[in-house]
Structure formats: C-alpha cells, structure tokens
Figure 1 (cartoon, rainbow, N blue to C red):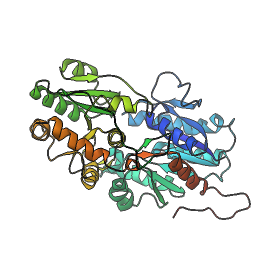
Figure 2 (cartoon, helix red, strand yellow; figure 1 turned 60 degrees about the horizontal axis):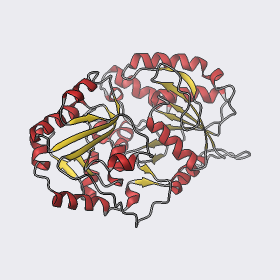
Figure 3 (cartoon, rainbow, N blue to C red; figure 1 turned 120 degrees about the vertical axis):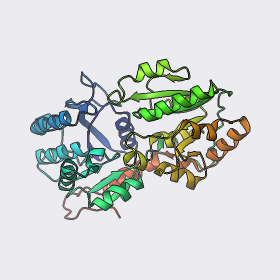
Figure 4 (spheres, one colour; figure 1 turned 180 degrees about the vertical axis):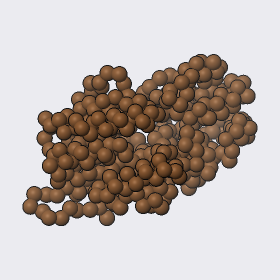
Length: 390
C-alpha cells in the first residue's frame, strides 16, 4: 500500500479532508502533518491524528514564514516516530520547503509532489518580494516529480509563462466525491423549495467582501424576492465584521459550516442558484480558479451564477449552462435574475442536470487512478528509473 506523507498549511481546512478521503479511497495510507489555524491542536481529521507543526494565522504572511522557519528546525524530530513514507505531497509553497527538510530527515529517496490549488497574490507581484517568492518556488520545485493543480488557467497564466515547475502536471479538478460509481444515467430528482423567494447559496470559503456587499444590495432592491444563504468558513481576516454585516441584512443568513460530501445534497437542495463568483484576488487567482462550489452546485442541480470573463464563466459557457454576468453590479444582477419565474428556472436547471454527471464528480475509480499515478513516481527496490507521468 502506498504510504503518503501529506504536509498541509492548515489541517482543519475542509479541502485537506477531501484530499485525504480521495487518497484513502484510492488505496493509499496517509500520514497527515501540518500547521493549524486554531489555538489548540486538532485531535482528528478523518480518523487521522495530525502531527502538529504549530499554529499560523490567516493573512499574516510574516507570521507564517516565521512558523515555517521554526518547523524546519524541528520537523526531523516531529516525524521521527513515523516510518519512512513512499511519497510526500506538499500542499502550498511553504509546505514545499518543509517537504525538502522532511525528505532529508528520511535520508532522501522520497519523491515529492507539489500540490498548488491557488496562486497567491504575493507571488504575482512585480516587485522584489514577488520575484523573490517566484525564485524560491522555482528552487524548491526544481526536482519535484509532479505538480498537482486544479484549473487549466493556473497552468496557462502562471506556471507555464513564469516557468515555475518543470515537472509533469496532473489536473485534479475540485469535483465532488461520490462513494458509488458515477453513472451517465444518474439524474437528480430532488425538488427545490417553492419560490419566491428565490434562494442563492454561497457555500465554502467565504472571503469576498465585494460579493457580500453585491448580494446584500441586490436582495434589498428585490424586496424579499431573493434570499442568500451562506454556509462555510468566513475569512474574518478579510472582513472581521462578517457576522454583524450578515445579521444586519434582512435577506442574508449565515448557517454555519457543513461537511463535504455528507451534507452536499441537503444544503444545495435548499437553494435554487449557486454563487460561483469571487473577487478576492480579482484579475488573478479569482479569475483563474474553478471552485469547489461550481462542481458541487451543478452536481445537485443548483443553477450557477458566474462572471462571464473568468475561467469559471468560460467553462459554463462551453457547457451552455448557468447565469453569466457581464458586470458585477446590482443592476446587472437584476437584469439577469430579477424577472425569474418557474418556467425559466426549470429550463435552466434542466440544462444543468442534462450534463454528464462525471463532469461534476469523481468516484472511487478516479481515486484509484490518481493513487496509481502517484505510485508510478516511486522508485521500486532495485530500480534505477523513476516512472514519470506522460
């Protein structure tokens, strides 16, 4: 069984849990180590007890770099009790630095996979800091065996033009995970709540103040015909007044965190539309990503709303589904949605449900294929060549 050491920036990040589920469903054994964004150590992630590398704070770059430096000095002793892994997956740039230290602690011979699912705005800066970070990334990634990323636009707009990583690339989209095989005959039959009010679900990492203000303005203009349901983890480093803002808005409600994949059908069954817009790093990462909520919402029949000039918008345009906006204004939202009725919504939802479910979901066969590709990077005893992905 392939033994993977998974080094992560935040062990409590729901996306980390999803990757662990995927690796284990594919037949890998996982050891989890990483930082946390909580005061106390996280006792359990999907049945695993994480190796705690210390606490970091969201949005505090200097503090995170100091924590990485401290962890680099102690990671050998932190990992000393575990058996040597077959492979190390480093999630994000700071963990790539620690992966190299861990590899040295295991006396080499452990291939490293670099998992990068967001392009941080700091590495895109055209100043000394940005150039220094890109140089550091190229150096740290000089001998990684595989780059795992989630959107073709990350490759086209960052990794390829900047020449950051020479390794083969594996595109692993942020799809929903199905425990049963995904069938092309699978069609969701769940009914949405009676409208009006029409409900827009904004689920996941809630980090975009502009989206929040836009939705608040739009729903007030509509006088209750539209409501917005928010679930997930608000980035209080970006808007510390998040809870007060939502409570003051008559048509917005925050309903806390959820579990993925366990709660997906229920939470998307309560809404009509999914908000797949993010201005957090406008013109950069937010324009290039294909978010989890895109796949999850479409899997459960929610009609996606996106900006037309983003990678998400281009993807939806290719699929001929969704509501695509030309401008991020309340007036544009009113033009696109304000006269919504049951007939129009029914047609929009039918187009979403008509797409092949595999567009939105991975199942265990995909997990096994992913783990098999990782296994192919490992040098077998007596072998002199590492198998690379085509």
